[in-house]
Every structure is written in structure tokens, then in C-alpha cells.
Image 1: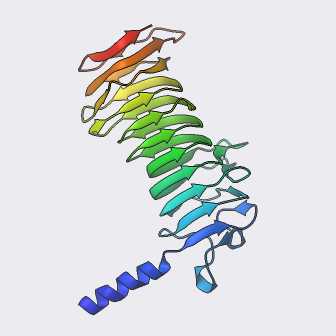
Image 2: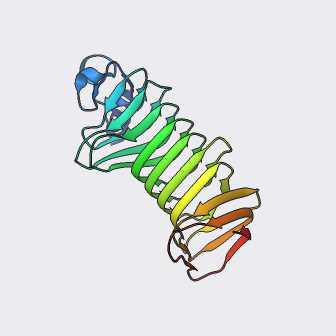
Image 3: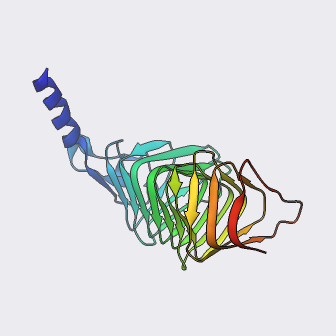
Length: 239
């Protein structure tokens, strides 16, 4: 039994490779990737680390990978389809190039353990089980984050709907930060004393703990807005 387990473990280790883009093309195309030789060529497998460099890769299928790195432009991952696709990254996403949707009506969903970006990220849905750090341009339809959220002074972060869903979470908004609806789940404690600012154009629902004692929140919706939920909101300044 032990020998069988070791053989499985070594087989899994042997299958974990780095897949690097080799040309402009579809994610599912074998020729778009260099994932080693022989049977380890593209497209990437669930246990593979993916590096998009120098080329444009079009997501034409849902996929699962170990990690994703998008190098500086012209490297980019794009979604151009009328079909919804989900990219699940079991580890980290690191973007200095771009991830975006263009010309299609479908939704790009990105699920990851951690996301760090100094590039451009556009996603219809983003679910992050760990930390989200942005110092580039990030536009999200629906964002759900379980870890710390940081928008640096160089960052531009916007989300139509954004939810804090984890346990103890820190939130720092030093760049341009704008939310439509903002939700704090009952399981979440969001706290920070760092000087921050953000804009709210929708409603804020706090069912957990939301205490940003160094932050300024500007309420700037065009219609009626509510600050509600089961618990009070603690914030330094409300405009």
C-alpha cells in the first residue's frame, strides 16, 4: 500500500510542470504552449504553473491550473466569447500584463488563492480565498474576498458588488477605490486604522464587523442609498 502511494505521489510530482505561452492562440490549443516535451505539451493541466509571456492567449474553455503569471504587456489573457468561462487557480495569480474581456458577452470568472496585480484586470466575477493586492487597474463585476484587501496609492480598483467573506480581514484603500454595493458577511471582521478613502455608489450591508477608523467614505450614488445590516459601521469620516 505504501509503495502504491509513493508511486502516485511521484507521478503527480512528475506531472507538475511550467507551461509557457509560445504564440498568440487559444488556451485549449496545444501549439499555444510549451509544457515540456512529449505527452507534457499543452494545454496546461490542473497541476501546472502557467506563464503567459510576450503573447495573447484567448480563454476558450474553463480550466484549472496551479498558478498563473501574466508578464508585462504585450502578454495578456483575454476572454472574447459569448460563453461564460471560469479559470480556477489553486495558487497565486500575479499580473503585470493584462487579463480582460473584449468583444464578447460572456462572463470571465477568476477564482484564486491570492491575486496580486500591477497591470490590468477585468473580470465579471472574482473569488479570492486569500489576499487581494492591486496597484494597477482592476475592474470587477462581483468580487468576493476572504483575505486582506489592499489597493495601493498607485491602484485604481472598482467593483459593482464587493463582499468581505472571511474571518479577520484588513482593508486598505489608498488609491482610487469605488464600490457599488458593499457587503460584510457575518463571519467577517474588517478592521484597519490606515488612512484610506473609498467611494460608495450603492448600499452597504454590515452583518459582521466593519471598522475602518482611518478611512473616509464618500457616498455618491444617484439614487437612495442605505447603510444597513445587523451591526453598525465604524468609519472616520462620511461625506
